[in-house]
Structure formats: C-alpha cells, structure tokens
Length: 288
Image (tube, rainbow, N blue to C red):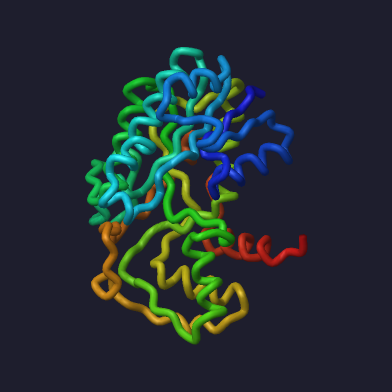
C-alpha cells in the first residue's frame, strides 16, 4: 500500500480519513494548514512523496463568507488544488480531490450525473469548480470526488446544530424546499480510502466521481430525523421556505448527486443516509 498524505487533516472529513486509515493499518500522514500551505509550491513540493497518494480535504467551506471574500476562497479552493496537482504530476503521486454539489445550478429535477453541465450560483461553488478544472488540467489521472451535505454531528455542521437546538429550544424552523444528499463524513472517508487503496492493484481511471450516502432529503427531513434519532419529538421541527430564511449565498434547490459512476468503478456504494445518520448519532452517544 502506498503512503497516503491527507491535507486538511484537522477538518471534519480529514479527521475521519486519518482515524479510519490508522485503525486499518494504512500508512498515513495528516497535515493541516500550519504544516502545509497548499497554495505554496515549495510547501507542497516538500511534503508530497514520490509515488504517494494525496487526499485533499483542505477547503474554504464558509459558503456565506465567500460571497464577500471570494479571493480568499479562490486561493484555497481554486489555486491550492492546482498546486497539489502540479506537484503530484511532477513526482508521480496520485491525487484525490474532494469537491461539492455547489458546482451545479441546483435547478435539476433528477440526480446530477458526473458529466452534467456545471453552473455554480455562489462564490463558493465558483471557486470549487475552478479547483476541479485546475486539477484535471494539470493531472488528468486525478480523481475529483464530489460530495454533499457532509456532517459529523460534533462540530458546527447541520446535524450538530440540530442536536444543540433540540436541547435549547422548544421548536425549530427548517427549510423544506432544498433537496440534497446528507453524507456522514466517516462513510465518505471510507470511500476515499477505498479509492486510494486501489491506486496500485486495480486503479480507477481518473476523472469525476460522486460519493454521497444513498437517497435524498430536505433539510427539514434531516432535522426531523436528527430529533427522532436523539429520542425527541420530530413534530417540534417546523418547515419553512428558503425565502423565509435568506442567506448571503444562494443554495441549490436540488443538488442530489448520481452515484452510478462510483458504483460502475467497482467502489462500494455508501449506505442510505438514514442508516448513516443513526450510526453517527450512536457513535456520538457512545461512552469514551
């Protein structure tokens, strides 16, 4: 098995990639922004070993802040992946780059296949699309793995927020007109590691893949499932529209990702989102 380097190792996804790899005996090293500046050629060149696998989990993910700070988002989401791709190309390393459903307009009526036209409506989406394009231009053999609605439940993500609000409020109002794929970070991490471990024996051709937990939901559906999962009454969650909950960055109304290319590559499909959520909540409640 090749050595694996994870950038963005201190984020919600990177932490799970490191933990799963370590428990599986996969040789892995994690680095945060303090250890590797992915926007700096010298910093990246000094960290990427020849023939290794790099999983890029580093990203500017403050979707609303990106609307007024697109330059900073572009540096991390657009230019950083390009630097990683160039260095990987130079040293013969494999690159797996994580992207997002926000590269799509969000006006579809059925799941987006990997080759669907992109048309991001937010600064965050534009910067992530730039990253995809830059990676494939520099390293066509790279893998772009788009995902969506990623959570761990123990940070600042949606599931964690709903757990907190369930304790603090009698009722909550949640948007019911945005549809996507809730994805447990640990399940996505397992998928990324499966892709990484295939780099030698049975490599997957480079290009774009979609990896999310199976099925679809609105934020309202997900919130109700969280309440039910912690033993609370889901009727305490009330629906509202996006117009009633205006945010600086536009959200895709429908951004369900089609995972057929993932399955066709022989990769293990991620389980249904309700099963994954139950596992996530169970892990959070488990004794130390």
